[in-house]
Image (cartoon, rainbow, N blue to C red; front, side, top):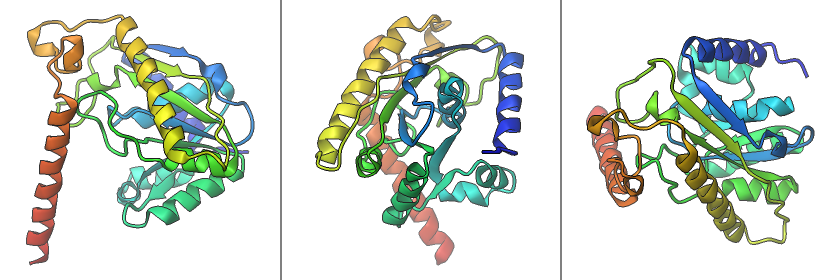
Amino acid sequence: MKEPVYVPVIVTAKAMFKALGLKIDVRGAANVPPTGGAVLASNHISYLDFIFAGLGANPAGRYVRFMAKDTVWDHRIAGPLMRGMKHIPVDRAAGAGSLAAGLDSVRRGEVVGVFPEATISQSFELKGFKNGAARMAAEADVPLVPLVLWGTQRMMTKGRPRDFSRGKAVLITVGEPLHPKRTDDVNTVTAELHARMAALLEDAVARYPQQPSGADDRWWLPTRFGGTAPTLAEAAALEVAERRARAAKSRAAGA
């Protein structure tokens, strides 16, 4: 399949990685099936996670079609790129339709990328998972591949200034696939996916080759690893406050 948009985007991204001196470590890429449909489930800690999760499938020669919030398609630059790379818009008010679109893509033999947490985790720990990834994999009878990123939050994440200073390490770890069947309980499969990704994340944090430069640079580490990121409970409270603020702003705009 020709990829007139995706291939140049990958080439450009790799050139940017080199310019930034990123120390990228990809492990377990052989767990991405070289052919056929699959669902790739990634944690979500940065606005750049689409790029790096996609890079995890690149050694297998696969192009990942990510499911992403449909408002991205309205952006004058990102919109045409998302369409050209055949990513899948997600309307959170019409989840069934979005899930059906992802399922169609998987059945055509594509690798569909999903962030089961739905939004960026401000604690950098795994939040609760939606079961859409497990539902797609089970319904289409394709592998469900766990992937964990670590280090991307140091460049561009929610509530922090961007930092593209050189030399940051990024770990991309692909775990062994799950093989759910239609008869499986999708919530049980989702719990297993969460457990596997939690183990991959624990390992990634432990072997990350760089440490905070000082007390003010501990924000990107979870509290249980000696960092100052919000706990899962604190991050959840922040999300609730943000949703209320957006709703109030929307009501004010419509008044």
